[in-house]
Image (cartoon, rainbow, N blue to C red; front, side, top):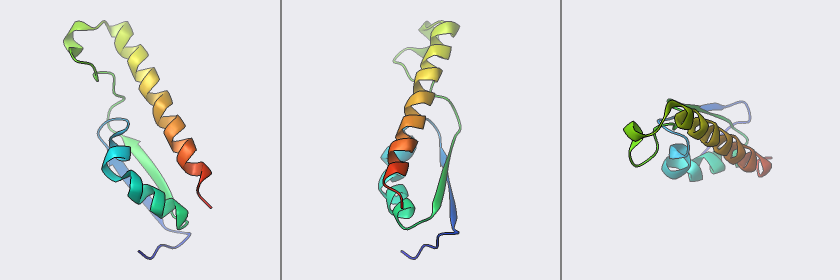
Length: 83
């Protein structure tokens, strides 16, 4: 794979952590090669429970905040190994 340091990559992820499972290895290789990788999440993961219709709006907001924090942490951890 040939990547330049000015190359930008956009990853579209349906939910937080889908990018890690779907193409986490590729993201790591791209960032190690010097590419800038941005991830856009299409949802915040607030419905990621076994029975989403049974949880309150407050619980959905709390779950979204947790998922957002996890995604930010994953992005920072990945960035530590970039050049």
